[in-house]
Length: 506
Ligand code: NAI
Image (cartoon, rainbow, N blue to C red):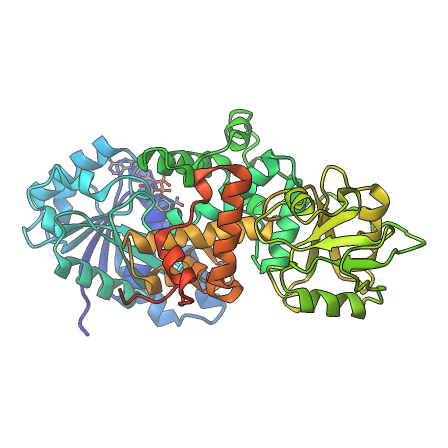
């Protein structure tokens, strides 16, 4: 296939512009880099040249290729120099008025056939296009930082964008070695929208005092397989970047409760405790290394009482087998004996509610999260209720740690940690599909490449069971009385009739 765009202008030579310039030159286009700060152009070219030299040293690029690439990355001191470009990518400051006026100026200089795109991450593509004579030739082209490594780009159609323009931009993305995904022009597009579930729900859990941030990070890494816990991720991205995105998406969706921000990040941002780059975020950093609080030790317990498992426990047979493997004495009566440790394993409900509904003695009742198959996780999570006796809590902790697997004990919460966060991610992803912002397949691609989740959110829902996820959400809505947990119709319908969340026929 011939190159979709042979003369490419990049405006704004900052973090994003230089990355886009690099991959466009590598694809074979002649690239012109422009910035209002002339020194920024030079700095960006030097930085990209250094990248190429490094790749050559590592043997990943030949000397000939690098020499070629370098001839294809030039500076442009004025917009007039860009008159022959067939694509202009804007990556300047994130301000609507400044972007609009830049594009108005560009339209006067460029040929009518030229395609103009914005790398905005939070502004409406349609709003920027409103200033243009040819909105059909304009689209969003949203890359991720660092561009050469984050191999996905969202191609965003504004209200008036021609479909052929999006197709051509997708072809060009592939020529640059990236995977294009198509998104409707909606707040946060796909990746920043889908990412709301992980961090905002984790913040909610901390703000309720259920567990501290380090425990939540451990649970989500070990139980679900996320590479970084939500608070490690906040520290890496930095709150001066992520908190405004959380607020923007919430307000752009007219205060939709699913995206509600949290005072924790607002306060930390105000206090300048924004993340790794300043040496302190949720974690403190010494020489760039996070100082992680020690895990609470496994309590030493002399006598472990017999264990009785609620007949309504999730994955009851697996839980009984696990207890057997751990050498527990299991009671089989219809109700627990007076000394028994009573185990419940609800989906979505809190331990208190379960103890009351099942008429169990709350002082001896402990919960375990069984959403995920025990064999598939590296950590077990237990929860107490306000009445749980400390000897019962410690006995449960010691028992479940007997084979050396990590155990976290948290306070009572509808849905433990994993259930809450997984259900929220799956629900928001389902709603993205329900709104037809993109295809389910593009959603999965965008999230796995753009957020590095272990699984796409819909595949995650399928793995843990759409019916289970639905049950978690319905019950959490009851526990919290909060509309943020109301299931998306996409999830409700597919969960109710046992279909895959990737199922699109309707
Ligand atoms: P940056 O601050 O690193 O670079 C912006 C550059 O644009 C600066 O060199 C500045 O001198 C130049 N500039 C500002 N106004 C200009 C104008 N009117 N004409 C020409 N040049 C101008 O910013 P960064 O991080 O590269 O972001 C650029 C755009 O990309 C923003 O819209 C941002 O929202 C978006 N974005 C940023 C991501 C990130 O992780 N940094 C990720 C995805 C999108």
